[in-house]
Amino acid sequence: MTNTIYDHGAFCWADLATPDPDGAKTFYAAFFGWGREDRDMGEDGVYTLLDLNGQYVAGMMTLCEEDKSHGVPPHWIAYVAVDSCDETAARARDLGGTVVTEPFDIPDAGRMAVLRDPQGAFIPLWQRDSAHPGAAQLEGVPGSVCWTELATTDDAAAQSFYTALFDWKAKDSSIPGVSYTEFLVGDRSIAGMLQMTEEWGDAPPHWLVYFTVTDCDQAAAQVEELGGSVVKPPTDVPDVGRFAVFADPQGAVFAVIAMSGPQ
Image 1 (tube, rainbow, N blue to C red):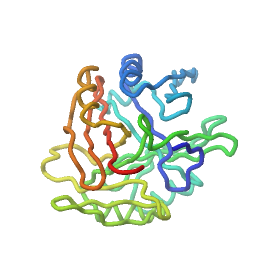
Image 2 (cartoon, helix red, strand yellow):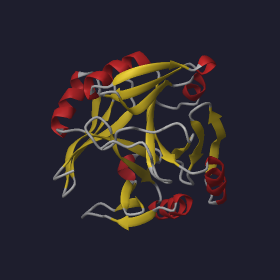
Image 3 (tube, rainbow, N blue to C red):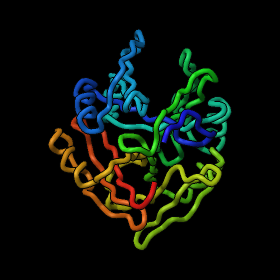
């Protein structure tokens, strides 16, 4: 659906940080059909707006040398819309989180900050300028973001942190063998959370970005044809849909889901 206004606490944007923007642009153009609009950010390099049929769905930037030197891998990251970056960052600190990047202005666009929750997952904030949409113009349609999911080492503590930080409501949506929590803004489900197990190995807590596709199995075949890889093969979620987790050719991990039933 089309959207330009996001309530406080809703995920509103996703960025890709990659060491090879040209390669990533080629991959995602073929995979999702995205167009791109490069914007010169001066000493900060080039920022690319990714669009679907002329409507913005995500962004892309070069993974900076400092991050690479600290072992930060290529990654997707999702932003949460907030009424005030400064107030939310201060609240996160009071709740035991860390403010990794203090709130700062992006001229003619908005204000942002980057947090790390007490378990270690990174989550950026976005406070849009009143005259700027500053958010995805499409969501939940094929080729756009539809869901964001937290994998954490302590789901009870994470639930306490996020419900206090964003005033999210938590809903138990567990299925046999899988403990799962939905987060809601008002009556709208906007994200999920699951507990990491030993099977996750040394993977750190993180947020995973999901994109809608029409056919999950076809997407899995296509991602490999384009040089990416299948991290988790297509899997059914009863009464929800069929999902898979992929890595693009540069190594950034993302998920796709083909929803079942009417959307």
